[in-house]
Amino acid sequence: MNKKNIYKIEFAGLKIGAHNYEFEVDNNFFDSQDYNDFNSIGAQLNIELVKKATILELTFKLNGSANVNCDVTNEAFDLSLNATSNLVVKFGEVFNNEDYEILVLPHGEHKIDLDQYIFELIVLSLPAKRVHPGVEDGSLKSEILDILDDLRPKESNSFIDPRWNKLKKLKN
Image (cartoon, rainbow, N blue to C red; front, side):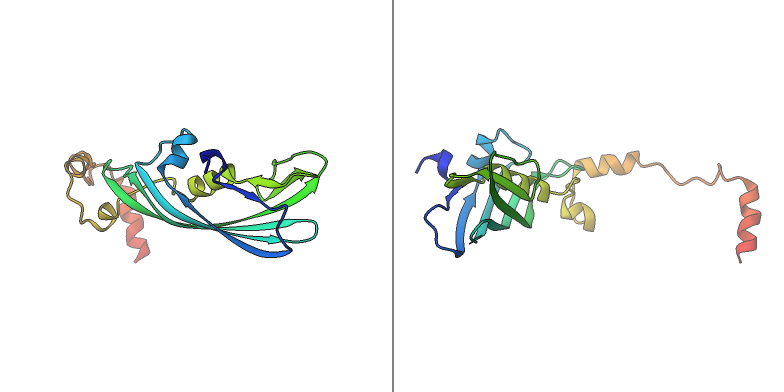
């Protein structure tokens, strides 16, 4: 099968009703998108396509993991990926994909290219800040964490205005 046609669904010959598709998403997909924000990925994508008389409804369900580097320590770890998304495909005069949840295909089109929707689903499911679970629970031992701990400002009461101490007495 041609790599360019892996993430396309031909809907022209389908009967009205629900149809299920499964796709494997791996590093090759992101290499073709020229995206390298993570080390590796292994994900299963299930798509339910419901064909109706005038529209198509797609539900994307993603499960898997991506190996990413921690933003604090730069240590690699596996980040769980779980995401869902919906897409409605309508038919009109011209192609229009300006809305993320609605796609308009020209009349006579017989297949839908899902590359961009799969890419966005995965990339947007990644958290903005990726922190190794060992950093959060304190179990990770790393040279970088030791350096960051040494650079942390020490608590000092020398800058406290004495008027605040009098206000603290009012609090009690």
